Length: 447
Image (cartoon, rainbow, N blue to C red):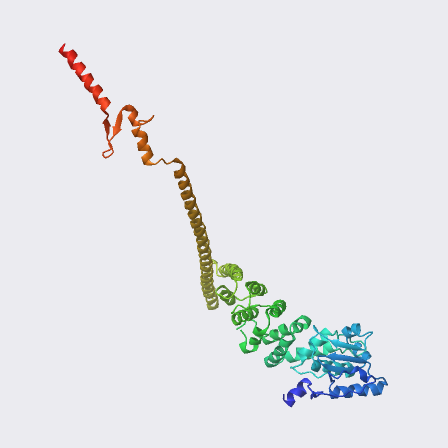
């Protein structure tokens, strides 16, 4: 980092150098566990100087991720409402999750508690601002209106508003601090806002600056887009950021429910017409969001057509009509034609989606009909088998019945059927009766 930058933003040389071990003098040596390293040398010098000037030795051992800080309790609790609640009756305390605070960050915080000075850079301002929010360092009483949240917030606003490069550095430093960096002070969303401050229409944005966003976990990304939703007056940037997130997480990392929740953060009425058209044609976004974008696009198109028609409508033209009036009227007509074309495209898209849905519905109905027909055939076949087993008489039994001249059979009329031709034939007794009858008739005639 250049000396000019250090002077411009009040950045000073590093307050401490990390060492593997440092022995801190204390009124209670037994409080220092050998498994912890000690506070940085320069911070220790500040604490020692305070002990000499106040006449009080350190009375608090604070552990932060393996580093021990021997401090004066009254100096710490006077600046932090969180520590004041937890250290009232304690002489030892360990900062543990969800307080994601590193020894480097806490050393800067402790320095501020003693001297009202803090070492801020674009690389550590997000960590210090987040830690100050978690520790409740917002009390300004007795300190000339200065508290760590205010100091860090002021530096953050100044650094991220100057150049996109600085905003990008701060944004990258926030990744290890999520979700606290967003929930305590909306740092991620504010960095993104600074990156796109002069480019609300999204024409995208330096992709290399926003690519860091795709590394965020889905649940943290949801909180970021919810915050941006309330901060940005136009949502083209928000849509492009979410689309980039979908594109980079296309291997099943996002569920459909997560995609829908992210898209719900986009207000389609705050999208430009061109981006609305992109939404309608984007296969990565959920179908429900596409339908919502199409409806908004359709309403916007109708409204624009009505406005254009009213502007170019059937008023009598003045013979002295100026060239500017003519050009404006022609421009309005061209805009109307373009809007009609956009509306036709939207209607075509809606019809295409309806055809797809009808096709899916027909496939399901055909499938159910085929299953029903197959079940009906099986049932009919089963019924036929049962009916045949109870009601069909074998042909041999029927012939035996006929041959015996059984009651109701053809033989009871003295007729029999030829088995080959199927024609009836007379029995012997019938021929005899016929012959006797003929003889009697001829005999009577001769008499």
